[in-house]
Length: 330
Image 1 (cartoon, rainbow, N blue to C red):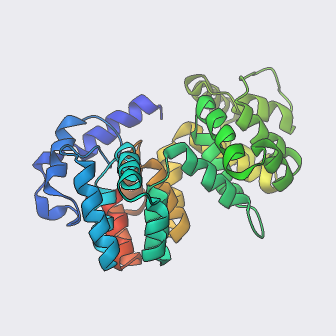
Image 2 (cartoon, rainbow, N blue to C red):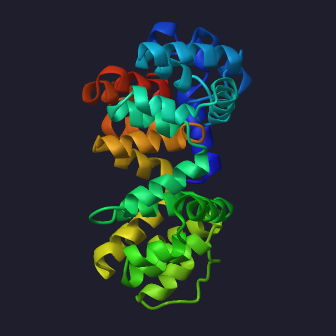
């Protein structure tokens, strides 16, 4: 499914928001927030710029919340502001108190909700660099998260993420990827990082032509190639990859194919396992881009809304923060 088609599917399923009663929304949502749905109609994210934004007022309220160790207030403010607005809040807090907001939050709020609030305070591409680093740090590499990020970000974004990764962690992202992966899978992730152009000359079943073809950034062309391959072979590309390849490279190819054909469905599938870090990081990462489409895909896959599923799995302020990002029932 193309991104244009995906947009229309999501619009059909989730708009207009203003016709849905308030009691179906997360109670952490400020009533002023509803205005942003009119202001930003047509976007695929769930988190929109707060319409009556006064960073100085937010900072005063945040200072009080930090003094009282009230995580609920922090959750309400930070999940009701766009990332750009959170950056303004962080700067205003620094200018007013001469303290770093992230450090102040870390001292007061711990556990999963504390981590989530810190992640909300990161600029978007800094957050992607952070996710990549977490996928490679410690015992074992989270190959699926590496592929998810590398497959769903544009070449321009990956270039910026690489630069930020070096700035933050004093290491080259490409070298880190090569060090944490091996064989054809390593070639695939590095090719994705470089955003190579597509070529359809390869006819053999070896890895090289698959890497060359599938790391194109021309999604319309790739969709046509994949559909043609399926018509010609009588099987899905996913089935062909399953039969012809093994190990991490097979996993990487399958993820890449799924992200080319329908990234929303792939991300919804990842969420269905309801593993905290995966759920949290996908919600934060996609909250201002395409979380509405991921919600629609999740509902189709499971028969349950993501909003309801979160309530069955999480609790307390952490749940309220996740619901604040998810935003509403479907």
